[in-house]
Amino acid sequence: MMAHQFEKVRAMMDDRILKLKSPEQCERFVANALERGFPELADQARKRAIQLCAEAVGATSQAEKEALQAVYAYEETLTKKNGRRTRASRTWQMIERHGIIEAVERAVNRPTETQGYTALVDMGLEEYAFEAVILRYPGLFSKEAVFRSRARMEGWEKPMRPKS
Image (cartoon, rainbow, N blue to C red; front, side, top):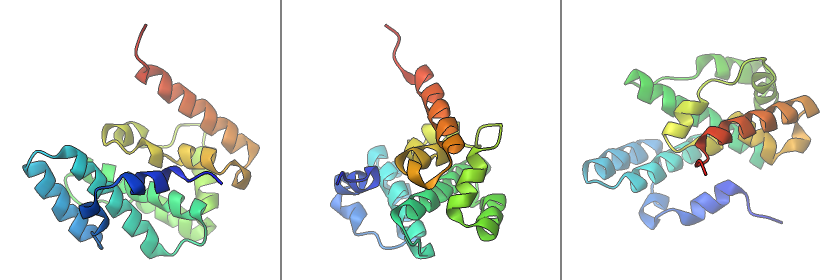
């Protein structure tokens, strides 16, 4: 069985990052890494914080864990944008009402794109988009959600490709 993308990311993390045990430790590490000129370590610490937050919620499957990581990554973009810790309140309300997998399905099946993809890309967190989660676990979602996710992800990739 192929390793999931998130397992690969974890395997590529610096040992110092893997030793971080709380999101607060990760935040301190991010600040220190940026101050000392190590943005790649700061990125790893942000991803570690997202992992730790999702693990604390108690997902029952890898798909749920990755979907929760997507929510926490989105909250990171909101926090950066607002300059203070910001929760994805509407998303959490939907998760409480419908569960994480159904919430992802509903978010992606809206006619407009899910919010935050550009912000995720800017922070190096594009693998946390709901659409990316759906494409990693297509059997858990409707054909419509898979189709929309694939179309959006292909559309997002085109502008990022270098011109020939």
